[in-house]
Image (cartoon, rainbow, N blue to C red; front, side, top):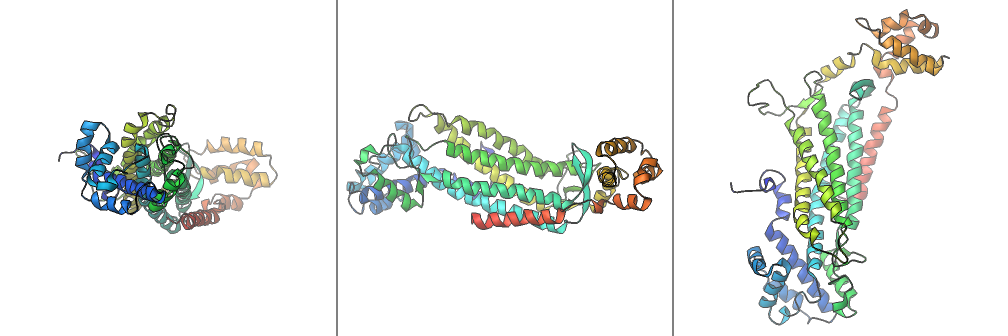
Length: 447
């Protein structure tokens, strides 16, 4: 193999990778140039039929031709404009007339990002659907709820999955809303005033944008506002962090001493330790999340450009946009793989639930004592002290032996309170609410 960048062969799907091939990018540049020519026709600047003539005469243009000429001119879009001018006869003299290079580049990015987001949204929804299946399957499996890494109060595994359904659905909603601001054309000339088109610029912009299926930016300088790209990257970084959170959960719960959830795919865990069952897919998700989060700095730094623009955004965006989208593409593929190979050990879940010998129900006992008339602060203090004395006994034995507790609660009441199933609140309704939210987002998003 002769590759430098891992995104060329290791990370990202062929479907996503294809969008960022040189030939794909040059094709998009040409699509935009043709659309601008169509706008020039409608504005009465170029003769009728020039857009179609241009489309035919540039069919054989290869990216190598553009970038070989760029080595001489130092400018990729100018090189393309020269090639079109030379190949397209009488119509060629109108090629790129009044346009600036970033009319072509930014509008091409909009087309590429639109296609990329379509892939991302479909993958994300598949992940949400898989999580919905898990939430339904394990909705009543009681497990330890943990805060600060400590046993807190009981939850169900379905409730845990439902939280991720909600969070990832919010990312789907976020991307759908942001797409309206991000995926827009920029057809407005050298500094954004459309001056070269002599008062007919709005016609050129409207016709070109409609031909490409885009809405134009309301106003721009020489470039589209860079907050669009910053919004894209930061929204994807939020999604990456949500996927990282789930991956971290799997990694933590797959610890040997916990063993509740782990990856069950057939793979070698370690080159030297045969017994290892490493969460490698989850770890790759977490690793790539670091990369995506780091890209937000570059995206935000590209917003402040000098005056009507400078060139500091150009080189970084050639790296930023493809790599961010390829990384998130790989993370979503890995998330699907992780969910397909996830193993749930219900025996381990039940064993860990009993590990605290009933003290996980201390809050439930406190609530009941308050209901029976004991001041809340006194009940909290008492149960804090009693929980520390459990030792080799269980919490039930400690509680029924305590005179203060017995004054408020019978042994039968204590036994009932200590049943984790009695302290799950509105978990069923909350799971249903998360699933309903996800389906509503899907319906409204139309992805």
